Length: 147
Image 1 (cartoon, helix red, strand yellow):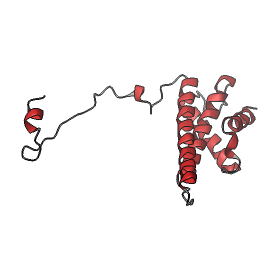
Image 2: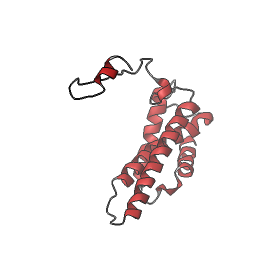
Image 3: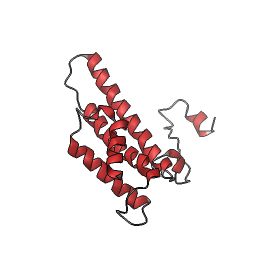
Image 4: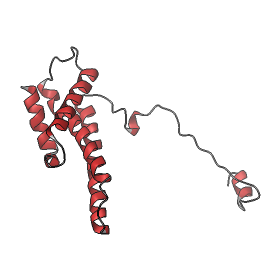
């Protein structure tokens, strides 16, 4: 069955989740990943996930779980030792990076452009500007002339 495959893949992708994430949270992440997949690609909502897309769906669920774990560990600041605080910060950062990788893998695995990536931009150039106060900035003359 596809759901059992996705559950096992999710356990493989985020193996250290059992202590920090309850079973109902994992089930909600899988349900949300299936909703995302149905909205993105399924011709008939609820028709099931083909074998080729089970890993990307599990990766989207892993993205959601890693986001949750990053949030959980980033707010865990009870430690009085700086070493422990750095470990907590690096753990939160690692989960955030893994979440981003899993989200990208979902969109690549399903053949879509990741709407959150820099490559999927709007085509607009970044705005830029320079502010210079004539009396307060000794380089005002240089900035005004474009040097």
